[in-house]
Amino acid sequence: MAVQKLKDNIFYVGAIHWDRPLFDELVELPKGTSYNAYLIKGTQKTALLDTVDPEKSYELMRNLEALGIEQLDYIVAHHAEQDHSGSIPDVLERYPQAKVVTNAKCKAFLMDLLHIEESRFIVVKDGDTLDLGDKHLRFIFTPWVHWPETMISYLEEDKMLFTCDFFGSHLATSRIFGPKDEMLIYEGAKHYYAEIMMPFRNHIKKHIEKIEQLDFDMICPSHGCVYKNPSFIIDAYKDWVSDRVDNEVLIPYVSMHGSTKKMVEHLTDALIEKGIHVKPFNIINVPLGEVAMALVNDATVVFATPYVLAGVHPSIASLAYLANALRPKAKFATVIASYGWGGKGIDHIKGLLSNLKVEFLKPVLVKGDPKPDDYRALDDLAETIYQKHKSLGII
Ligand code: FEO
Image (tube, rainbow, N blue to C red; front, side, top):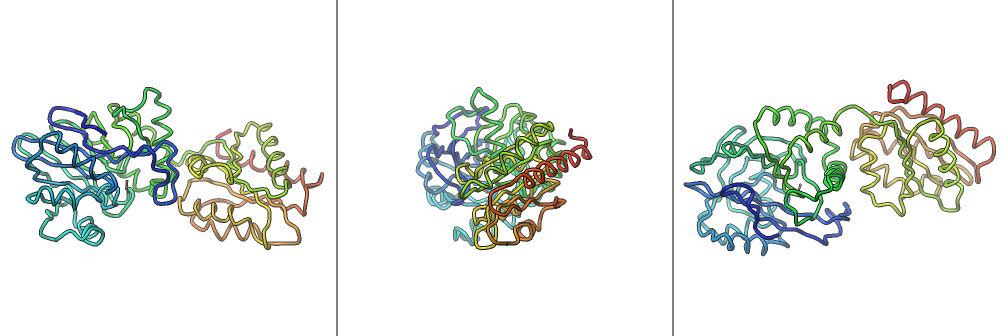
């Protein structure tokens, strides 16, 4: 993206990746993404905050040239992942006097990942300040959002927070402060939270408490838009990381010959009739991100699957593996399954969900196509879920 001014002597110099299909060869990017880098010109020193994915290095260099930057003193690295650090070697080559300012853990990562020489680093500690003349950057360590070395910085005089991945969103937009439709911003941020940040919600709770002690009016993450109204994203995060769950059941399912689908449709209707919201997702057709977003707040997850070779369908097993890694705050889980000659679906799913603190409800296992007794068992499951949600006070 072209250079954009945020405040006096503070510029956006990052790049938009409009058509990147996948991140980490895993996360779909239906709305693209961006790698936000920021340039701060103090009266004494000039600092670049993060860089961009190496594929977009030429855009960052073009933006620095457009601003006429001949002297760059510091490259602040908040996080070592290559979508933000990958262009540091190019910047160091163009500005041989520049130093990489980061913490000890990040320095070690950068030396491993990018082979940057040790002499190019200035190592900072939590709470240290970088003096740019009329502007001062204070470093605040925020480990595990989402790597162990992650930190943010606070520009004291301008009341701005630079948070790197924290509060980011995979959203490509030419509007630096986001599209007019706030729901697009919310969904982009929730998508990002679900797939990147959710496993670390307890760390995030503590970081938000620390951040809220600061006086700031702008949050500048390294993906997606800049927040001129910080409470918008902070309030959303507070909800996502809280222990509160929604009166909603996520049903990820696969159906090979239609039997499992009949079970899903019956259970869905039975839950709706009891006033419970439902999200049945055929995971063969639905992007993984949609399922991950539902995992953020849903109280219950029902894995619906046919058996393949005496176990759950590999696509459901893969989803359960991912759900386990994302550590959602769901309170209840179970399996509904159609089998041919036997299997151990519930044990298989339980084994895959060892990280989750869920109560496993009685599964409904059907031989072949569901029969009247099987539908009654699904009604019983709907009633059990109703009672469980009632016990949480969410109905
Ligand atoms: Fe956007 Fe963890 O990198």
